[in-house]
Image (cartoon, rainbow, N blue to C red; front, top):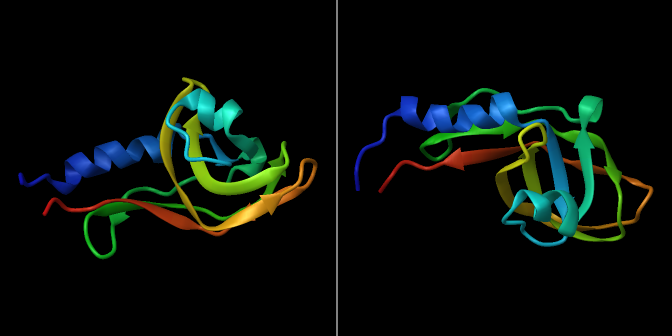
Amino acid sequence: MAFIADYVLDAALSKLDTEANAIYICSLEPTTYTAATSTNALGNASGAAYPGIGAPADGTPNGRAVTASAVTNGTVTATGTATHFAIVDTVNSRLLATGALSASQAVTSGNTFTLTSFTVRIPDPA
């Protein structure tokens, strides 16, 4: 496998830092922006409730990573079981990253949700 310099990995991860402006909790892992923000969406944190994502740094155990800050007051918009997160850019209607939550979470419309901080990592090629 080819070597990829940290500079190149950071360019990809920088999109999460500079363009992401909302995080959604979803009932399934979304593969499109529409699935993340509508079809599978159970809630979101955006605007002042969206804590943001940090700049790229060394990942553990390797590669490069960004850290998403904890969400303390996300809005639940539908009742169901949240199993995944989706980080999106609502300005350009882009799904930027998805992943499984550390534990599924039953949510009820009208309530709030929380997420602990987590990392999104691009590992070094093997």
